[in-house]
Amino acid sequence: MDFLLNAEQLSIQQLARQFADEHLWPFAKEWDEQELFPVQTMRKAAQLGFSGLFAKESYGGCDLTRFDGALIFEALSTGCVATAAYLSIHNMVVGMIQKFGNADQHRLWLPKLTDLSWLASYCLTEPGSGSDAASLMTKAVRDGDFYVLNGTKAFISGASVSDLYICMVRTGGDGAKGISAIIVEKNTPGLSFGKLEEKMGWRSQPTAMVMFDNCRVPITNCLGAEGEGFKIAMSGLDGGRINIAACSLGGATRCLELALTYVKERHQFGKALADMQSVQFKLADMAAELEAARLMVYRAGHSLATNQPDATQHCAMAKRFATDVCFKVVNEALQLHGGYGYIKDYHVERFVRDLRVHQILEGTNEIMKLIISRNLLAE
View 1 (cartoon, rainbow, N blue to C red):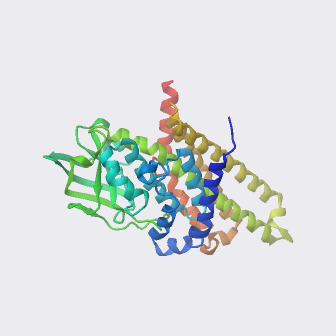
View 2: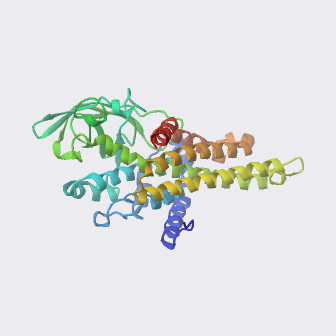
View 3: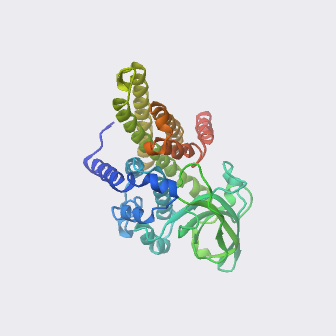
């Protein structure tokens, strides 16, 4: 058991943090306030390989592990959680195509995704099916060499801007075995988008419904075999849960740094807040809990990277624990700032808003508990 990062991992981590400090952090407040999706900045990140982490080098990717990805998303999120989170979703889609796609699909889509000339979105949730994902209703009916799609997806990050959508649709009967994964390109006739949602956080990335009205898609766009879509979706979510937990780590890390600076500078009752034992104890708890969360996320990343049989369990545990703990850390950082923490110029409130949704997406934390308990009781 080795808790030290190797030289390559340290270099990757430092590169991502430097990019966050130079290209994300100075602009995150403006992006949030004006709801600007920083595509050009993300394309700068793509030049460093951050949009093709899990694709093979032959397609322009980096061929990194999920553990390496966690290091990168953690570092990027110290600059802008919303931007890093979108990149994590894009990379999840790239990884799914790399893992489950055939050679033709690899050649067609991966080069455009790894250099971020194309952006990608993941479409599972529907207005009537959230946690109960296997009950989804969007249908794809065979018509010669095409599928005809009808239905609606909800809360889709990147919707209306992304160029490629990996969609879980019903090609068969009820339940998980009737679901297939089909890739839909943006300009396909019959594909449209709802209004942009007004969100509490993640305001610098677009979120909208994705709607299919007799949308004709070639049967060659099916990822994997018919009926394998739910398995593919859940496999993608294992990695997605690590990614979003890592984004929580980065946001909490930045807020702890901000809090440490603030309590040294802020004086009350004739001394710095940092000299007050109650503040010292709060900081100690924040740091200890953040480190515990980091270890759980890294463990899950290692389990998934090495194909451990209990990887899904570790991913669920890490996602539940890290997103809960990190939200607590950023909320405590706001409390330490007092009234200033509620002011946008001090940045902490943005992290509170951005991290809150991490307890909901990629499977709610209640669903994580369900996964964990089912695995425990099946032993």
